[in-house]
Amino acid sequence: MHGTRSLALQTKQGSLAKVITTAPILTVPTTPFTDQKPGTSGLRKKVRVFQQAGYAESFIQSVFDAVPGHEGATLVIGGDGRYLNREVIQVAIRMAAANGFAKVLVGQGGILSTPAASHAIRKYGAIGGLVLSASHNPGGPNEDFGIKYNVSNGGPAPEPVTEAIHARTLEIAQYRTIDAPDIDLDRLGSTQVGAMAVEVIDPVADYAELMESLFDFPAIRALLASGFTLSFDAMSAVTGPYAHEIFETRLGAPVGTVVNGTPLPDFGHHHPDPNLVHARDLYERMMGPGAPDFGAASDGDGDRNLIIGRGQYVTPSDSLAVLAANAHLAPAYAGGLKGIARSMPTSGAADRVAAALGIPLYETPTGWKFFGNLLDAGMATICGEESAGTGSDHVREKDGIWAVLLWLNVLAARRLSVAAVMADHWAQYGRNYYARHDYEGIATPAGDALMAHLRESLSALPGTQTAAGTVEAADDFAYTDPTDGSVSARQGIRVLFAGGSRVVFRLSGTGTEGATLRVYIEACEPAGGNLTQPAAEALAPLVAAAEQLARIAHFTGMDAPTVIT
Ligand code: VG1
Ligand code: CO
Image (cartoon, rainbow, N blue to C red):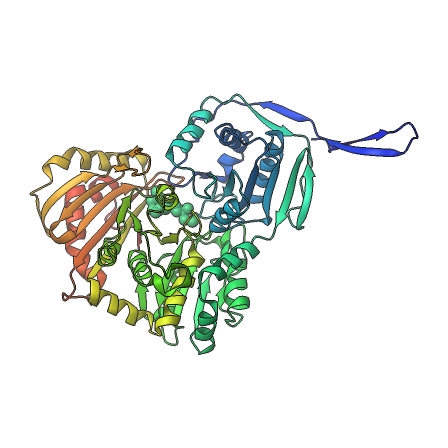
């Protein structure tokens, strides 16, 4: 590549009248890659796949081609800091300039958490954004990278858009870029790339301001000043700078509250997945002697949250229910909620809260892209997924730090321990015992065969006797979006038992190697029932039923899950 060419035009007098910066637009031939279908959350592949010549470029050009009206528009770009983040950002900036965008906003150092990117798109009226992340997947030269496109409401591209992008990847013949050098991603301020302005923005400031507008910061500050202790594990991923600023600087928690607070390209060789396996250190600290009052963690791109009180793990499904039931204690939600939305595999705990509040409950397929329309239409205020994602209509993504702040706001108002809040919640609404069993790294044909077997046996399942009782109903979940009527079919097999207990089976859509089977297990215990059993005990009959119905060991060759969360 050559440098940018500056053309100095001389007037008759010989003085410098005008400097026009030009950079030639290059049209580079490419052939379609056949593996660029976005999954649950964007395109995720091994780094070495993204390093193939033209691979990232072809996908980014397909995104631009599928977004009408991008000429003259603003684009937000940022990522979770993982390996390849900076390189792909420079590629995307040059391509945006060649494709006629007027402006790119990019987070300093290439950093923007997923919720902060969503907020930036909304705040600055951008047409959309490229979020470079593979979220909870590990990072590094031999690990994962990803590109997600978010639309103008700040949310993940909905299915019609991801389908248009995918269709374009299969026919693309060329991409556009310009001959321009890399920009300095570390220096705040504006630069010109060809005819396009690039502004490097503070990744934290706007987001922190938004959080301060939603929650009672003085009350949380008072809680923290009263001796209440907090530990936040940023897992060497993107939330570090956000957490330092919000918890330590703005809310006055002592330095050291945030651990693993520096984003690293390989997340310190860990999976930045805030679950009971990968956030084991935090779990053990919270269950051990001298535990802080409240522990939390977030994932690679900052949209997930793990909540653990002293001696009290909170399942993400329960967290959604508790937050919905108590949201009115935070200023932003004092007027009440319009509705609650949860993904299908998420437990029904939130359904009971919605019923008690007299508001609608929406059940969507897995993935945040299905919540956007409900939030835009004002039908739902709070959304959540069993995979540790919770969020609201403040942005169009799930938001890990938001969830922690809402919990802190609730605790500041109620002055109860997390364990007491949970006991009180279950006493009022009953308890949905819950676990997810993941079988990772199985061969794709084996995963497909297991699902095919379940689909074939669907009609015969009702009436089947199992250790968990008789199967009442079974189906393959399909969703019709109530705002635009679009249908998403084959979203997971549901096996339902009396009283709302159930087992759900689906294959992951975020992995980059082989297949991952997810088995979601939920046992409903009504208020007044046995609310204090160990979860594994309450779920054991359903686990046996899952094995009986899906023949997991037979198809996967594994007799135990790799992750239980
Ligand atoms: C997983 C979770 C899903 C979540 C998705 C993206 O998808 O189950 O609830 O929305 O990851 O989250 P799958 O298809 O692997 O089950 V993130 O934080 O990775 O953007
Ligand atoms: Co994530």
